[in-house]
Length: 602
Ligand code: ADP
Ligand code: ZN
Image (cartoon, rainbow, N blue to C red):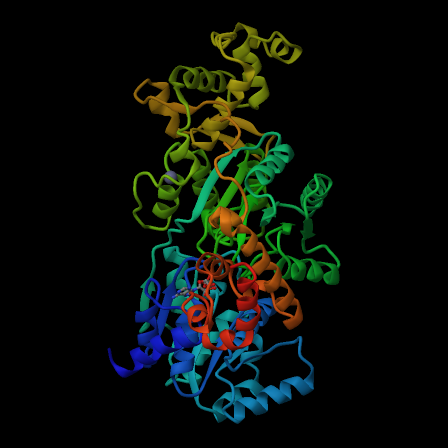
């Protein structure tokens, strides 16, 4: 181990209270410490922050961290200060005097990490300041914000290109949890990182359990899911529209849950209060549009539920990734339906994006539909999407645990396809089903469709099953649905082998049984029965300290650390220091409170 390596390790232990580096952290840190550039792709919760925070402490000078959101900066700086690190942020939330104070501290060499928004960084005033001082590195967090194609595009990020020219000798690190190849290439080009060493970690989040099922009886299902698996937990419920956010928040509140709402249409102050409450208190369920999430670093979000489909696998992955950052078991739970796909397709069509972008968006949507419809392992499918090979069966998703019941739907599909073709690709699902079911209603008679050879050929199957067959034919890309024209169905080229009997088609049985009550609930399931009281007590001590210090509870200690305390029951400072997550600074600040709380129990 050379000198800088041992220094990095020392900081890890002393400042952050961790004993081992994770994934590729050590190599990334070495790269920066040596003065080279790095591009880091690591899943949410993987531990990206340490990759620049430690080099910032090891290298001489001030590190500049570019971050897209004020909330994100504030959280990180508060957490660093809790660890005794000299960190500051400058953004529009500060008044002139505070900005001046921080600038003076930077000039005096008293700031190890300075968090800035991209706009602020590129102001002349800031650039001049930075030219005056020694800089240890630039860290560009959430680097996928440079990508036009992405879900968080921020035009100012593209201006960061200039950093390489303005400060050619300062190493730069860009970090993101968005993994696809296109975004990666764009980050390299937009940020001039051609010479950067690229670190791609596995995108697997083994502690997240995936469940995706058909949208039926959504409200009751959500209530059951939370009641049976997550009572008392913090979680996020995503909805597509403001209206649905309000509806679902109300539903949960009347069912007795501690739920809050968050969407862009709300009064800014109320919205901010709700966000603060979610971060600072325990056991709150946030019902939100996707406006909520980036920058929410709360480590003990135990579930993310989607009541509507997002628009791509990337978006789904990023949103579900907000669950279980602390590495403890968490749930990603989604309901999806054909209506979502139709809605989303319409939005894509109606946007004023150029045709090539619309095409990519349709492809992305269809990849997500593929994930929803798959009868094999979800995790394997997600990892494959990101170009990674997983195991065939992860054992921790719905399809692995309760393999879907499938049936040979080849003949049924042929009948449906033929009904669509025989009626001239001019009708929607309901009419096609009426023909198959042999309903002699007015519309059928008026077109003379009772005379078709397929009329009544599908009487052996219920209408509900027909609906499911047609839905899956659409989702699996055998049938096209024209969302601009009354949802009229037509055949796609891909259905030919089925029509000709060259390919068998197995479909999912209509709806799986409701999610089994496998898991119990809450974090305290990881705590031994005998230690539960102590754990709850430690949590209340933590909450009090957090309130006193004006920081979120996890900035005091993570759940994991409290669980370890409850289990090991340290009796003195040395024993407490052994626990993961307890560093020197926090020891000095909090040891008395926690040691006392523990001693009451032993
Ligand atoms: P990301 O930014 O990649 O989502 P964070 O940097 O927020 O992830 O880290 C996620 C969690 O993992 C944090 O609580 C952090 O303290 C913890 N962590 C990071 N590195 C380590 C490590 N080497 N050992 C233990 N915990 C770690
Ligand atoms: Zn699986």
